Image 1 (tube, rainbow, N blue to C red):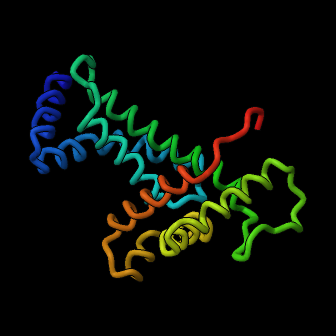
Image 2 (cartoon, helix red, strand yellow):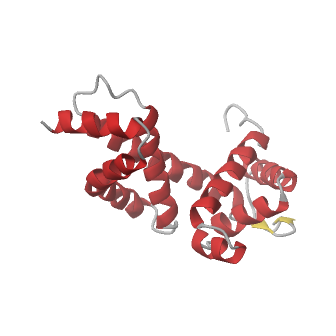
Length: 186
């Protein structure tokens, strides 16, 4: 029965009525919350709002574009896609922590004894950050390195928080494009 209900919800959400999309999120909220809590326990130092946003983005992407027609239980696929988006977010942040943990405002902290691959990664990040729009680079630095919440950044910029999340996401996509591909064996 639930599979049939979800198929109807998905069909109506895909028809373009945002109230049905919000309805899907509301019905899925207990499952989304459980997955967010499980992931948050793995990364208590990260901003939970960012993690929640990633899970929600994964859920909504799957809701709008996922191949759910053949799924016996569409909600299982929707929640799995949300969870996987959260895991990707955690992996990206763990990798970024290694690169930026010793990155100072004026460049690389040479006083830290690091292996050459980490040093090259920091140099690559610094070079890529210098190419970004300065406001975008600052947004990434403040929210990812300094731990300033998106709500604070949005308030300071006079923007909606959701707009700031999109702005940072686009800047991070650009940043990833600017970074060189990892060398084999690193």
